[in-house]
Image 1 (cartoon, rainbow, N blue to C red):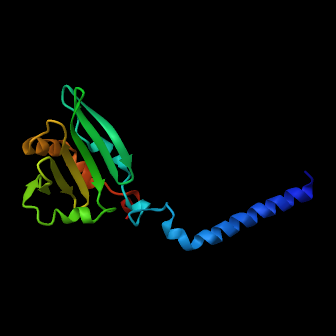
Image 2 (tube, rainbow, N blue to C red):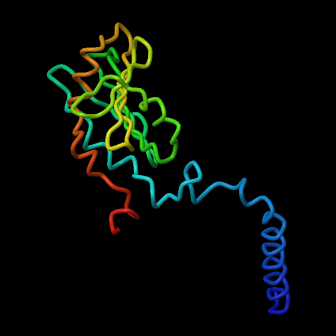
Image 3 (spheres, rainbow, N blue to C red):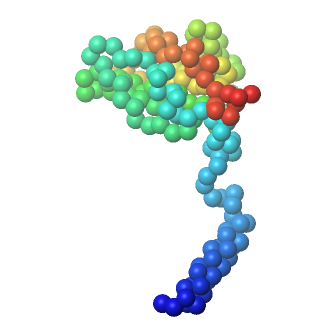
Length: 169
């Protein structure tokens, strides 16, 4: 291919990319990237920062992380092959409506508002930002056992956690 054809082909590709960008510009709010729940990524704690705050498994138990993303981490607590509970930490910055259920909380655990979500789940709101949740699985755990698991999280460490963009303020 001679030099003129290469230039023409390069300019055609550049023009096609520019035209594509102009066509997609009105739909930029539909395109992914940059935010989680309309919150800039820099203001949301990365899920990997939560992993060290989960409780250590007791003898005969295993903790396996099943999901991790910006603002959320989840693990399964197993006793042998059976899953006892799902454990999760989420940054409610991405879902402020998750904080609303704690506004009428009558109970507290280590000074943080505690709510029961049905017969199988307990949730705690730490530092008015982080929801810590234990959901019983299988045979299940009673409320007292779920509360003990919630207390086993590093709640002080969680309260001190900040998003990277907020840490410099």
